[in-house]
Length: 61
Ligand code: SF4
Image (cartoon, rainbow, N blue to C red; front, side, top):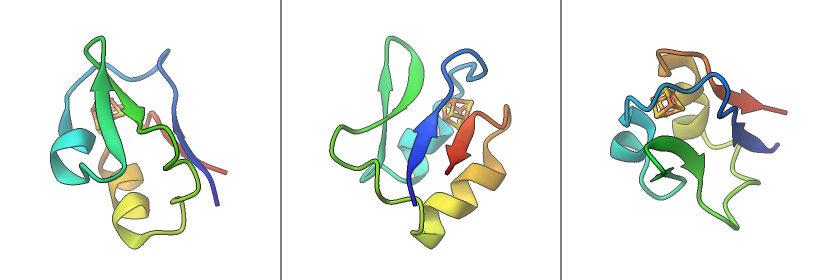
């Protein structure tokens, strides 16, 4: 399962990069998936972060 961040929705709270730094980072003030880590959507920490994201910007697909 893949994970991505919708930059149109993210407002840059920074929570994803803080809580799951092995998968998420911040780019230009917005959350982003670290290149090469896109296939981690099945990781429970990533799924939990998708639920916690305050703007619902983290997509699992
Ligand atoms: S937790 Fe959500 S709103 Fe915050 S930086 Fe990450 S994707 Fe953006």
